[in-house]
Image (cartoon, rainbow, N blue to C red; front, top):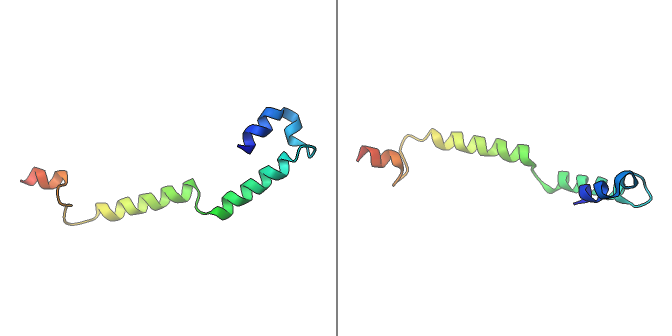
Length: 69
């Protein structure tokens, strides 16, 4: 949202008169401190998918079990 406010104010959004620059810096710091970002979530998802793909037995009701039946 702060990005939109800076865009709406044009060049005025990048100076210190409106306080948007400090709000942007604070918002960015909070996003970093808040937890994993998109890259980390994607990496965790890939690891979990690989872990579950390596299972020897199919899940009950899965398409592999139906194909065998």
